[in-house]
Image (tube, rainbow, N blue to C red):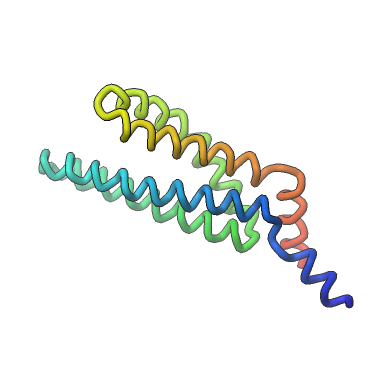
Length: 139
């Protein structure tokens, strides 16, 4: 009986699972959108373009790592995700507005990413989620 209580306390709440799915979807959209950027950068054939793509892929990989660690109950990862979101979302929304004039579908995917990230971060910092992260740290 006691073992079941400990297991129930440590099992991940459904809300956190939903937030993680949203973040993984965002990661997937980012990878797909980055292929379009690769085509643009290949057309320009500059070392700045290659460096920019390296930075973009490095950020995507780091974000995926943070999502994975958040799923493992690491509170530092959700805090890093929040910091990245606060820093990146305003710039991405501005860029998405520009993209809307060139390619509305591409721009809508960008807005979708921003909405998913915002919703996921709100979920990850709600009381139930914060309690779960505290419990995971205590165990």
